Image (cartoon, rainbow, N blue to C red; front, side):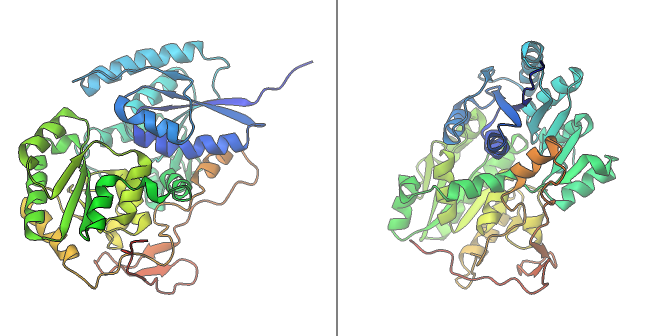
Length: 418
């Protein structure tokens, strides 16, 4: 008598964003545990940040390579990850039905290469994001293009990402528009947030009646003069607005920390704190008047929450937020950052909270769509279609509904203190 076992899938993550964006896929597998099981392995690429994300979603890794080393280069990490992941796959029983990777990190690239060289199908979550600039972001743009060549399934977050893949010659039947799993994670977490999740540093700002600006910075291509310009712009901003305070969770990268100490030490209006956990970060984001970031995931989260965002990059692979006016690309020129921030903070009439969720990047069902596709459901959920689409690329934030083509209306103000 032959015993039938559920199919086994293996997901690999190395950074906090990867865990956050893979968690909805793993949750969707858990809902269908009688049909299939999925395990998660981690490389430890972001050792100081990944563990809290694992705990938040109740995820226990099947293995942890713990590859993080101080001062390591991407090449050094890639080499160790390729060797160790290959060893893991050689001993993994049963042999996975597919290897699942997310995004554009060095971990995702190493895992995709390992899967390909091991003749395992590779599923790419968040496929098709592109800037068309090989060096922005660095090395992520090349990482995701490489994974696009190695992957068998391409789970595109948006129609535009699908179009990028089609233009690169990926067969349409290998692409599914599912939405971004970060929206799944965000909605899951919003239902569980409490007032206690708001960081004390943010609470002090809000209780004192100040306007809160939340900042993140970590991109490699910004190290040096660009990052210095961003930090000096933050200092200029708080000197120009007495009612503004900045909360800056400082990335653990030594280059970011050294620059922060050099340029922001002693500026009382800027609270430089240790990285927030994901609960704290989303709680702070939802109460912020403005976000300044170079992160891709933060652009998606902020747009979903309706928070105005300045992106300190010259290009973005997530243009939807720019097109509807919630996101502005401001680069790293000091004066421009200050001017754009001042324009938003000085506009007392600007209303920024939408009266319903902004489904630019997802509708909360991406994880279920991905699992349905991997399991070959005969009647899978329909592909993701953004509920709102931009009608122009101005800053007027005008929308049309894809259902009834009526205007999308803002309501507000979003900056209530309850």
